[in-house]
Image 1 (spheres, rainbow, N blue to C red):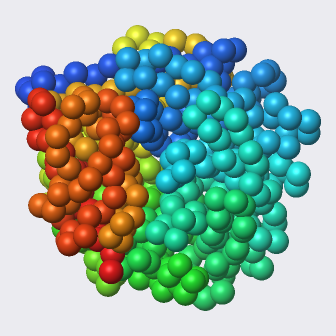
Image 2: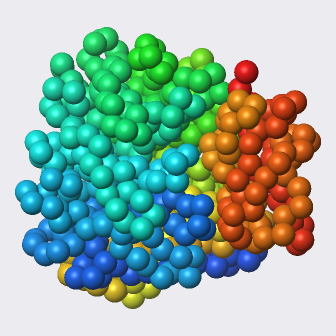
Length: 486
């Protein structure tokens, strides 16, 4: 006779974990989840895959990658959306002959100092290897560069603009060893391959994630490896690459495998996630790594029965204004369709939302990266789910969502670094009537361009520290210190 006691004990543990999770969500103060938009393939596009960006007009900008089949919107789009969910399509890819404008933009866009947006496509262009493009806020698109197998192709990483004005990014394939590259491109389209992976035996190869600029002027990033394990690397603007850490260096890959993008947190360390590995069920990790390359695993996913804490966090984390890290797991959770979580710098994880909690997954499924907008709320997208089930074998065309946790509004500078006299954009909400802008206590001259945008310059005597904006409704502090460059 089979002993049923272990099964009953496992079931009891599972039920208890679910009840604890639900209790923590219900008890969370001022927590409100909203589905802002459900994509419809015939009119909006489908499968938003890139991280959203807040523009100087206060709207959120992003891309859809498209869906299977044929149709006007199946090759991807660039869109903008208000915080209330009103969507405008700026560009439909493959609208030019032979898809010369590109197709399948899986990365998000970045707004540059000139006010335009820049991004990449995975395919299309004159060689069908992808493109790098510029697009205005009104939707005029210009192809700056056609990617190639020789110099690098298939770019799924959001571009990063440096202090010299150029953008830096990665390609998954291409280069001399067909293992991907790091490149730079000027706003006018001057392209340069800075590094070809496979040049060193331990550099990992096949980078998919965006780079992050550090205070030393170098860029830090991850190479996912071909099916793993991947690396963390540092690269100078001139292309000198140093491998800081190689994943799966610990027995059983408890340190993780196939890393996603990094962030630079306010403690001076980098944080990120891995898709696989960990000390539980090979479902990924959250990690911390110092600029010198010392890695600490903070959390292993699937630590809870049936992976109710989530699995496969591919898009990294963000640091919100409360100092905690927030992110999404693409799978796992109570419904198996992903979670939204909070994790402290010490590694304590709390599940904030389980996707597919509504009938038909109308709230979304398979979530992607998050941002915190200057209203204090979190915004993100899901690759599947939503009201339109005509995509991905009936799994839905994706959604845009928000999560309010009661975090206070703030201001954000763009860029977050600069020399004295450099132009700086300040993004925020309700900025009309602002009476003061200071850089770590040093007053700056400024012009209020709109309720969401202030234009200023780094004042003489400024030092590295927070930017404060005094408005009629109160004082707003920047979400990160502004670094004054020598």
